[in-house]
Length: 145
Image (cartoon, rainbow, N blue to C red; front, side):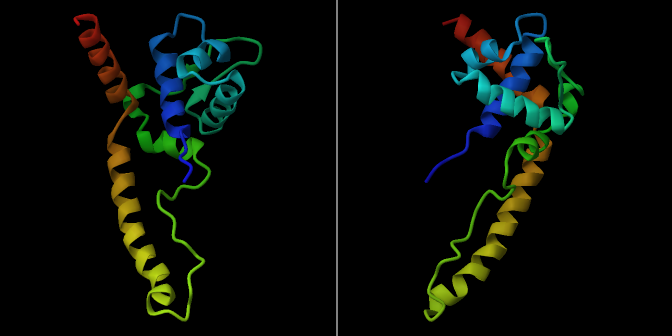
């Protein structure tokens, strides 16, 4: 199974832009922090811009958040960068002649919808500002080691 890192990388980008707001904010500099390539960073930044979470100007390396980190939720970021909003997916290729195979899809859809709602509610409560605060807290702890 392949996992998406888009959300993690998008949060990384937004936190980097906020923390290093007076530094080099080129896609190359951000890519070095994410340990990715600048093209991926530009694609994610484009998605964040389309979702009105980030503003950029072509030809300058000075992206800015469009809102305060305290009002940008993890759910906002997730919806900006993930192609499919569903966290869990039902296998549509089951044997309809089998008791389990013929009923598992609808059974799981209901359960997965409950999980989706719970996850989205929780993600809406987690703000970018909270994550940035934790980054700073962890950095201070690292410095004392």
